[in-house]
Length: 120
Image (cartoon, rainbow, N blue to C red; front, side, top):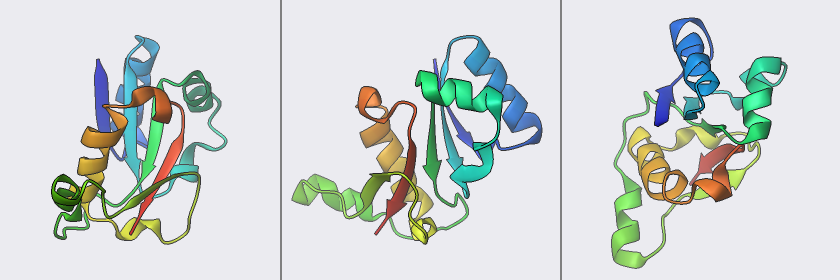
């Protein structure tokens, strides 16, 4: 099973995600700050193993989905970068979902175990 977790950096979301990972599932986290797990040994284990992927974004940012342009033009209007880029939190939640469904889930081997920042 693959789970998509909005937030999940603490409390019930964190522990639910850990339980899923312990059971062998994969998890993609949408986090405002992907650095939140930098010193978390348990989560680092799953990131290095490739079971977890971190996507920087703000699930509360409602804007038009520019990702739909990809179907017409063949190229999404956002960039997905493995690593940290400041200011990558302006991507709409619809484009974040577009990336996860059309990028991460379809090409898991490319993105597994990485932190991703989406920027326009």
